Length: 118
Image (cartoon, rainbow, N blue to C red):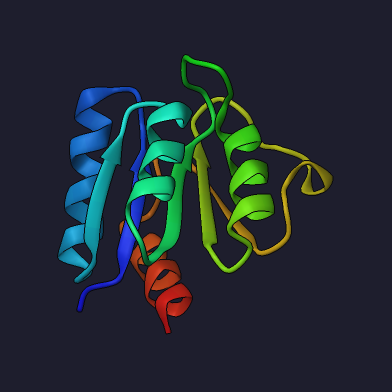
């Protein structure tokens, strides 16, 4: 069974690109356009192992707040955060989070996904 990855990105083209990267790395990508959709996926789909989220997005919370919520409710989930706008301080990130600036290196991102799923 493929490892499930929730991909959260509000820009359609970037979402399609991120989903393609996740799927080409051998994972099952579950799409969400904001934090609320992502939380619904975590509540409804068992066995999600990785959250891959952008920081900046519309809705009730940004990617950092989503990462903290997922870390609190689903502690085993590994988290990748990306942003083209801001570089968060290390103290702003929950434990076990990998951060990539956009545009991210596909090989580095794929390596992070693979190591998180191991």
